[in-house]
Amino acid sequence: MFLDRIDGGRRLAALVSHLAGTDVVVLGLPRGGVPVAAEVAHELRAPLDVIVVRKPGLPGEPGLDAHERALLRDRATQLRSGRSPLDLTGRVALIVDDGIATGATAAAACQVAREVGAAYVVVATPVIAPGIKARSLGADEIVYVEMPAEEFTTVADHYQDFRTTTDEQVMRLLDQGRGNGSDPGGRTVRVPAGGAILAATLRIPDEPRGVVVFAHGSGSSRHSPRNVHVARRLSRAGFATVLLDLVNPAEESTCARVLGADELAARLSAATRWLAEYPGLSGLPIGYVGASTGAAVALRSAADLGPMIGAVVCRGGRPDLAGPALGRVSAPTLLVVGGADPTVLELNRWAAARMHCPTRVSVVSGATHRFSEPSSLERVGELANDWFASHLVAAPAALSASG
Image (cartoon, rainbow, N blue to C red; front, side, top):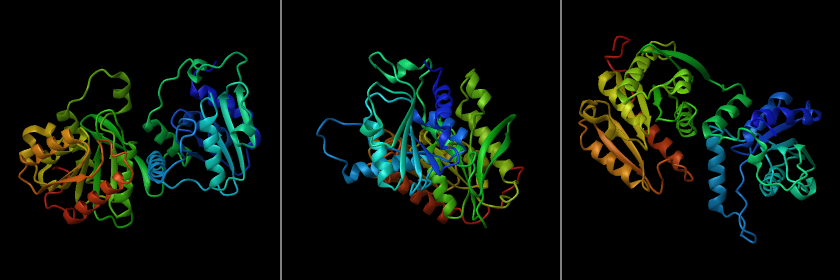
């Protein structure tokens, strides 16, 4: 019995110490396998990545078609925050899951690792069902902590704490596994905002043409794979990006109260004034991206700051929640909605009709609320980039810390 996935990962790490110093890449099977893999990668001082495969289907089911392969690629890209996969050519692929009941998923992962060039494949897990061998998985080696003698039921039965791992947790662990949460041009900063200290991920390219601040929706964070994906697209186009947590960890852990849109908007406004004076950002035009309920927060802040905000993009958002503030927004605003999200689309059209600034509703065909369909986030990034390139072109005259 394991306390949780971290305990399982630490105990497993001791059994794969023979791989330390080799050219090994640790590959977690998302989502539950990634916390285990992160502990293993930490002990081996090895890079961490994910390997995404389809869940096993029915016997005799046809193989993956082009659409399914595209879905898997997009899913992996989201979890990696838009980064490319680590190269496995000629390397040791250490595939880690939180438990193996049938071996079908692990076998599919072994096949993928071979196809992309891994020279040696190891499967490792805290607990495995009796009778599963390395050969049946297509692995060169299999490592496990426990193989119960009795009949195997479910992986969850072997953990005291087997709560669901979220996408945001996977994102954070992968960031840490590739360089402690940083990448070229990016750093974590602490932003004072209305009595709170907020964390933000800041990326400033050479000669930035503007800065875009992201306001996420409720229940999300600056590690949101969708916001990170769009931010990277804007960064490549020359915009500085700020992925901002509007709620700090202490507030999240206590859950004493839920902050309302007005209070979150006040925090975003205060953070924006502070960022306007930050070295490398001073004098740049400022734009907002608001996602989900964060769209209302961004629009309320834009209404309060007036000409200080040069443009706004809302993705899959609820701008209708901005209420009377809609009529006070002066920044050109783009509302991006999935075509397969009819209720939110109608709410966005309702909000657009009540705005007096240049406003456009752009529909991404076939996309649902989370934009998880193949290439839908790429389309959002293109639309956001085009909007900011057109409207975020010169520093507003009123740009100042006093706002």
